[in-house]
Image (tube, rainbow, N blue to C red; front, side):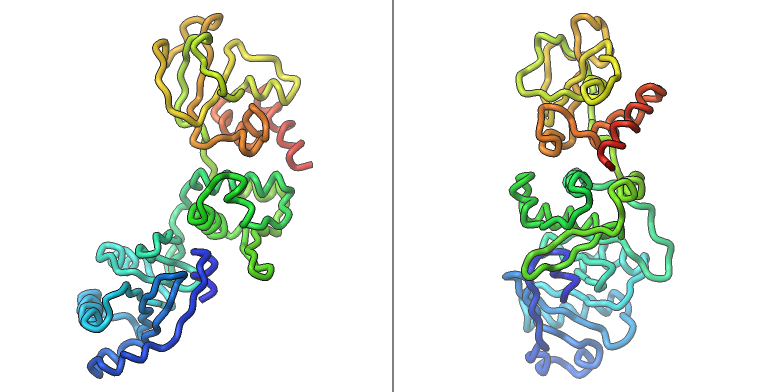
Length: 313
């Protein structure tokens, strides 16, 4: 199944399950059953021959199948409404709706959010790994990106890359294609179009901000906030130096309020390390713009727009 392969990054093989002959006629008349291998995991895929019945009945059918098959099983459905989805999730029954939804907990799979005959739910924010992957793609001027390079670039596991890619392709702004055995991330949008369309899904990468005495600042922290913006533009330096880290640490002088601008600096604890994207000890432009989104200062807003023009150009 191309859909499962695309989402999970695992090769899928399947064939009709011959042992179904052992089951009562009523089960054989309700489902077509395939034996599938996803990567190294064997499972059964049950395709209802008509509309799926009551969940209580489905549970009985699955229980009966367990007499002959001890491995995981999943329903393969042509469509799924929100209410039926919620019921399947509550009962922990795996399922896949090709091209729309997938819930295979035995594979550690993500759940996609596309429904039939209902309004799509509000989009959730991207995961940090997905936001980083999106920005890396944009910095590459939206050129096709081979996903095999991502694990090495960011230190992500193969599963993290798969989940990040799945979340991005679910938006419809990007897609994955194959070049031989390699998977390639592509988009028909320009860098600016992609950023603007994805903006509602993007989050402030800084999850916590506080102040410490400047002499307590550890080595290795990167330049962030308005300090970073001043380095990337003609904007003057802020009254208080701003630094960032992807590590959560506590300091003896830590306060939530600025007490002395001559002795203190601001520290932001980031959800991911933006220096992986920037290649320098300073937050990258796109992450920086998001971290400053709540600052309503015309000078800062104009400077951010000018900085981003350099990304689009």
